[in-house]
Image (cartoon, rainbow, N blue to C red; front, top):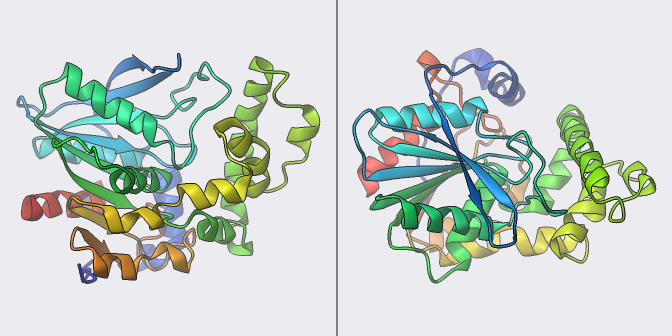
Length: 320
C-alpha cells in the first residue's frame, strides 16, 4: 500500500520531537479510565496481569493494548487509548508484560521485543473465556514491534483478529538501538538502563546463580543489558542474535490483515531502517503513515486526545 499522507500538524511547541516525547512520557495525565485487573497463568508457570476497561454498552469488539519498553498498563498512552476505544464502543484489554505489573514475575525470563507467545496466550485466553467476535491489537514502540512480528510470523492468526495498529515502532531493533545510544538520546537511554538494572537486581535476588554482581557492573549501555540478560534469559546467542531474530521488519511482507503503522519523521528513537517504505509498498495490507511531527509515542492533540488515538479509530472505521 502506498505511503499515506498525514494531516498531523501540532502547535509550535509540540513540533519538537523531544518536547512531544517528554510531554507524553512525563507530564500527560489521563482521567476517567476505570481498570479491572485479571491475572492469567501461562503454560510455563508464569503469569500475566491484564487491566480491562469497558465500553458503556456491551460490546463484541475488544482492543488489546501493548505498552513499550519498561512501560505498563497505567501509562497515559495506554489509558488514553483505552479511554478513546471505550468511548467508541470497544472494550480494552491492556497487557502488562512479565515483571511490568508492579510485581516481579515468577521465572528468570521476563519480556522482550519478540515474545509473541505471550501475546498469543492473551489472545487465546480472550477467545476461550470471552464472547468477542472482533479483536484488534494496538502496540506502542516495543509493543508495536511485538505486534507486527506476531502478525507476520504465523499462519494461524485467529480469524477474530481483524487489524493491527502500531505506533512509533522500532521495526529494526538494532537500528533503533544505535539511535538510542546516540548523544541526543543519552537522557532516554540512561533512564531505560536505570529501570532495567533495578529490575535485574530483583531477578538476582530471586535467581542468585543466574546473575552476578560482576555481570550487573559490566552493563554500561542498553546493548550490554541485552548481552548480559535479555539474550541469556530468552535463548538467544547474544544481543545481535536477539535483534536479528526479533526485528519485525522481516515479517512485514507476510502480514495478511489490515495494519496501520505510524512512525513520526522526527522520532529520535528510530533509525532509517525503522521506516518500512519498501515493505509497505509491496504489501497491500500495510498502511504506512509518516507524519513530520510526533516524536516517540507523542503526537500531542487538543482536549488531551492524541492524534494517533483518533487516527487509529478512524482507520478501523474506514478499513474494516
